[in-house]
Length: 186
View (cartoon, rainbow, N blue to C red):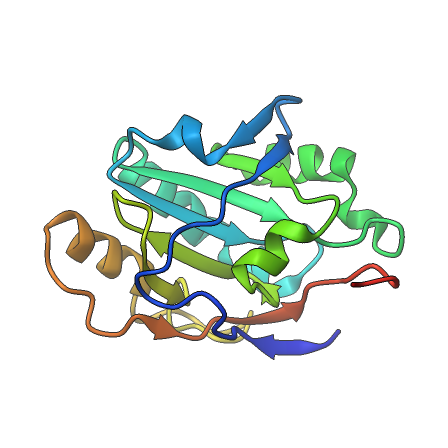
């Protein structure tokens, strides 16, 4: 396991890169279908990473709290050839086992993760109603799987965004396992 912190490729104010990805519901999804939500949260994640597993409850809490106001999308970009736990079928099983109700999509080509500059799991990106990046970073301040959060960073930032207030820090790196790139990365 390679531990990484988020990096900055997209900067505050940059637009959300579009995509067309297959979801665990067996339908293709793009940003357009989420256009009516006041905010968008894209989280690069996977099934096997202990950092993601430690954040599933927090992610589900975010979804339940804001499901009518925030389009929440999980994207798995890991190479299932070398990490079978992250296969499409295992994504379906993981979502069922963990009670995930938000959209969970597969980035088979890994192009979407590259466009966003995602490097670790989880790696969250929060966008405003115009789909401009307002925050890239942690879900909470528990940086190791065994840590207990004392601040729900993403919830606080979503509340500020929805209230029309400034988010004070637009980048606060997340930490997790590296995205498992295909051996022939371009």
